[in-house]
Amino acid sequence: MIRTRIVEALFAATLLAVAAQAGTLTLSNGAMNSTVLVGQPGDNVGWDFTWTSTPILDGTNLITPWLLVSNADFVLDSGVNPVGVFTPFITLSSNYTVVGPGSGNGEVNPWSQSFDTTLQTGIGSYSINSFQLVGDLAIGNIVLTYDEYRVSPNDPSFNPITDTIATGLTVSAPTSVLVANASEGTGGTAPEPRPGGLLIAGAIALLAGLFRR
Image 1 (cartoon, rainbow, N blue to C red):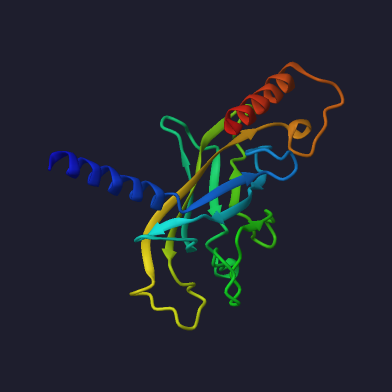
Image 2 (cartoon, rainbow, N blue to C red):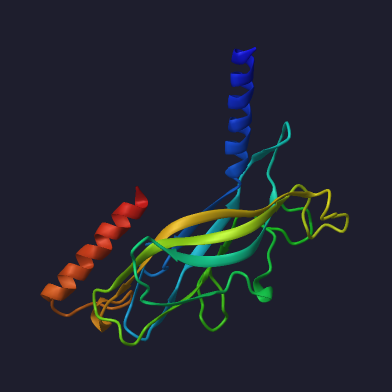
């Protein structure tokens, strides 16, 4: 009897673990194809993203659910100070998108979007404080909160009571924001390497390597 209960508990834990893996999130700063954002004091930088719905167990059925974002935040690691202000774009009504299998109602999977501060697209923007010093660094995670459905919310037959699998789920991706000078920004090239520039370039390479692991 005890062995049976242990097996049942392990099976239930496995189902929960699979269900928790409802999607994947990848970030990029575009120009450098890295998760590290680089900007000068006073700059407005931001993230490109790709968000994908992946199969989960819905009861005993393996399905690819439909996902709808409800919140986005840049959550800093413990003890890390911000170097600016995060503003989410992905949650704007103009960016409303259901991520999941296409059912003829505008769903996409995966959903990719480039950062554009004018169009307010991408995960969001990060406005670096004008008083920050070159070399200041904020490390953390972009965290999306989303709801999960077995029927697309765009489907005319959608019933929020019977078709909702879970609400308040989260998916995250590591990232950081590095304060640099003009020649060390994402699009800049320094005419001559300087000691400070070499240190910042090394920090960017190190952070990019850590996030790829």
